[in-house]
Length: 94
Image (cartoon, rainbow, N blue to C red; front, side, top):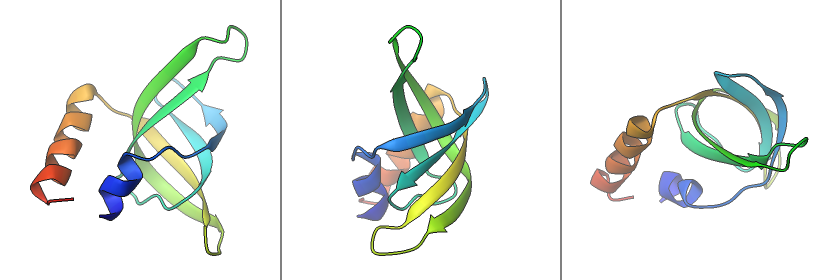
């Protein structure tokens, strides 16, 4: 249940750093190294909506608790990586 539940849920994040190859953000909710995430945001200067598919490469718990908060470094991935991840979840019955 875990990965699928997270993958299909919306979580509010706070983006701390962003580059062409990825981003660093904090989120209240569990993220595991290797998770594939879809991040959407609006460009502050134009209001244009952007969507980035990325994979968590470093996860640090920054506030423990019932709903822990994590700092996540994520690297941009291709659409085929997202498809492979969804297929893996489906095959595992999640």
